[in-house]
Image 1 (cartoon, one colour):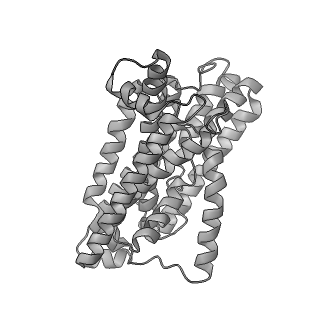
Image 2: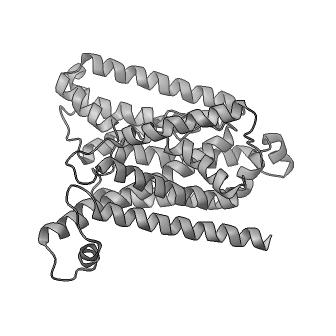
Image 3: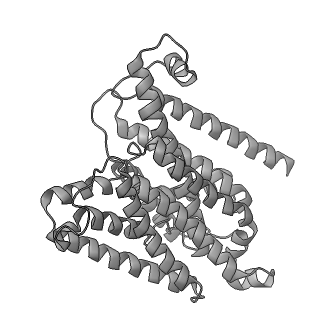
Length: 350
């Protein structure tokens, strides 16, 4: 037991070191390469550094990295909860249609004027416009409210999963309708947002995103025992004296807020939520949520910052959409999960 704890502590130290490494590389590399020594000066306010480098580090790269860390933590934690509550290894934060609701909010804000004769905002800047974030938040919140309302009445997780998929399909159909009748430039603006990005979030927006994510992650501190029990089924959880309805409600609140906030600020970002929990389980060889929760939070941050680093294509002017990077690496990973599960070598129990 002591040996295993020591091993786990060593793994966590390695992961912390890896996170610091990718953060340092992300601060240094890009279209403008800045030496690490100069980055330290910029962060600490020391003199003798170019003003342009100070601006790039403090106003572009640092908020982008903090956003990536928060997004990775949020999506991974939400994914872990979704996979546990539905007992489905391919469930992810968007399985309940939260991102579809956010996408609908943005679609209405950006393209709604084409159908309402200017009733909605005729156009919005995709690069971090607070109005756009508000529209995404309202859309995500509306779907989350429906899910929470239904979740209090539906006892079967599979039924709730199907309802979530239906919510996603319905909102997706409305988005497609808006796209069909909208002007080309508005469709392009919406498409840019849908690619996902960390670099559009400002310090002002981080003042909202940070406490929201930390609040939802804080709920997880009360859930490890319940999440472990749900792995063995709701009947087993009830025999342990747990209030399953309240537990499911807290899980839905936490995962919905986490995925909804990230979608609102960064756009829909896929595959991180479904992949990271499996990485954590394979690294730590456990399904114990007391260990998995901090593990997915840390690994999620590493994966998100690494994806942003790849997206920057250091040394070039091009920046790939985050969804392109996560899909290129995430799709083969999900395929591997499916094939491994079909061979019967993947267990989803404690």
